[in-house]
Image (cartoon, rainbow, N blue to C red; front, side, top):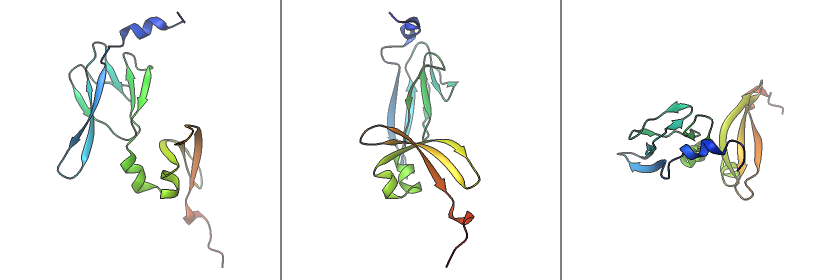
Length: 130
């Protein structure tokens, strides 16, 4: 057994479940904590038998805060924020940073699951040249 294997003994056979629940105007994803030792959303413990709506890029950890196992991706929000040239090829994930001309996002290539950084440049910072 490798170092740290004992921390995995606290993971339940059925630790959590994610369910899509239809609402009046859209569908929301909820996470249900089914564990004995805790499910964490962005570092905050949910609690056995409790549920919480999930937001895009929520990080889910099991048993301990640092045992991250899943990042929830809401593809509907990405389709409205980014052009099809981006969303057809990449899954847009979390915010990595911001600079003078825009922000940087973590993206994953859908075909090869490779990670890339995507810089979003604000056009308003550049003068129009005619």
